[in-house]
Length: 445
Image 1 (tube, rainbow, N blue to C red):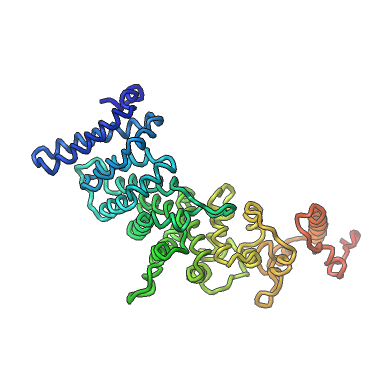
Image 2: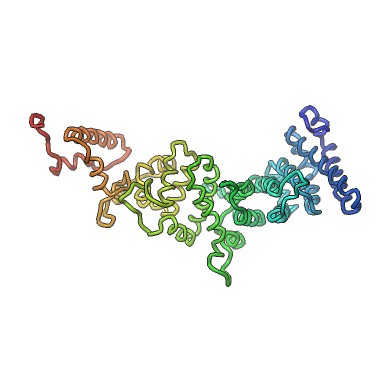
């Protein structure tokens, strides 16, 4: 059959051929209800016609605008609404995913067809459906393909983002038009369990879609994320937040690096929720830091619970987007307070993140984080009590080694001050001037 090879697609990659195949698919789908005896044949033929269209757009990208020009999405929408089998729905999703590649095509599908509503209805129908083993595709495969089409709508629909804004979320007015997609995405995340310890494919698509939406306004968007309180338990209001956090914490606790791509979007969604919703920030803060305090007797990366796990993820040498997303989450959780952030993760762990984000560290912050915490000084570099860090380092050093280390630190701090990277009093110079250092007599040693 044509469209299976690149050489065969040229004949099908014309406006007339694509239009004819789509019309044929719709006619065959209509015959299913009219002639039950020929239903299986009609469905198979309909699927073959849709396969030809999808393969042609896949192998011959230049024909994709033709699909939009002939309003092929109208036909796909009618086929989906007429009740599609798993294979038919999968192929419809594939055609939409390949054809929506410009703001013009996305705007037509949203504004003229209300395609988000159709996609949400079809995905919801497959969410709890048991797999038909006689079909080529499972319900989750179908959902995944339809979510890819929904993602294309979210990505290509005009953003209308205010000039100078660093937030790439949809504007509130535009987000409302895609509200059905956000709702089914959150419902999918809530309903689907982890698959062999990983996010199921539809859940991965769903969390990616959720990243496109704001959480503040208007009310329909806010109520998607945080349903209004009713007679039910308070946890119902936070069911989506709690589910996303649970997935994030569960995946973060694994040591397998293959999870990094799944943790990052979850972290970024939580960043937006924590930043824009104060009650969510308070709720999650006490989950990451249950006692509202840190154990400064241990290094931040060695502390028990999720807080230590997240610091370890920040330290991954090739963490990429994950390290940045974790840093964003912790900083948002701490109210964008740089001093608290340094205390929570240690300056040594935070330095790379802050440099990448362009976060300046004023001298006042360095002084502030060294102030009393439970009547003890905290070393901003390590995030431990200062006396414990000194005891640990000095315990196994000879006097000569201590002197060499003091000289090395003196030179290091002088260089850092000269380059302007930091502007603080050289602690070695201060110690020498205060008489805390005693010169060693080489003859007596």
